Amino acid sequence: MEIFLKAETWLALLTLTFFEVVLGIDNIIFISIVSNRLPVEIRARTRNIGLLLAMGVRIILLLTITWVMKFTEPLFTVPHWISDDGSISGRDLILIFGGMFLIAKSTREINHEMEGEEETMATGGGKKVNVSGIIAQIILLDIIFSFDSILTAVGLTNEVVIMIVAVMLSIGIMIIFSGHISDFIHRHPSMEVLALGFLILIGFMIFLEGLGKDVPKGYIYFAIVFSMLIEMVNIRVRNRRKKAKEEAHE
Image 1 (cartoon, rainbow, N blue to C red):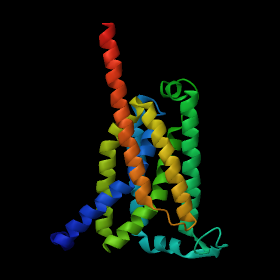
Image 2: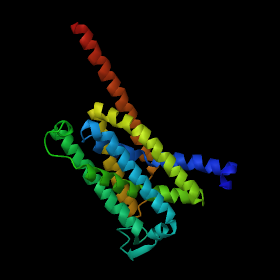
Image 3: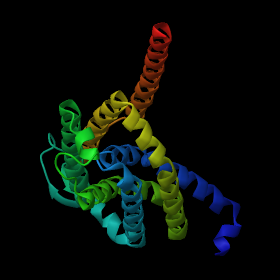
Image 4: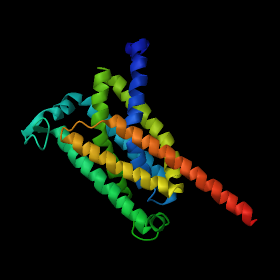
């Protein structure tokens, strides 16, 4: 524990926690959307269970960091028109299938929005939603995103204890803010559709990353933030117009 008496330890912890939260934003959006398909009274509990189990999975991966790093070793070779470096590793396979899962899941959620299934399912009508299935989806997506965060952690510090503490802090922050994000998305369907569109984009980016393609993530995340800000302005404009109409009728 004497490592926590060093200033560089706290700097690494704060930096790593920040990166864990940033890399987990996609996860929070996904969790908020899938949990909104549950009845209101169990949404928060399901989100928290999923995040806590995901934290356990991340800690296990960190404790087996040597084994995890072997996932970056090539498993087989492929033509260069498929992968830039001509090889596919275990990490690449996880990213490829994970990206495909995220694209398929987000597309399906958009289809549900277009068909208006959410309200009937959330209020108990329509098909039953499998809570354990949603928790499994949360854990699966967290495993996909964990590889980037673990590789980032290894680049910042060699102390596994610091990595674990950073993961626990970041998951705690996600638990605190996931409810607010979920409620905001639920109140504004246009924001949910926009978020799902970006999850499709992120899934495609993960898929390309699994094929060894160099994807400029900075541009993509800038586009996401910029579009979110524009949509928030649109929401405010719509609310002001709605309020003005109500006052005019009065």
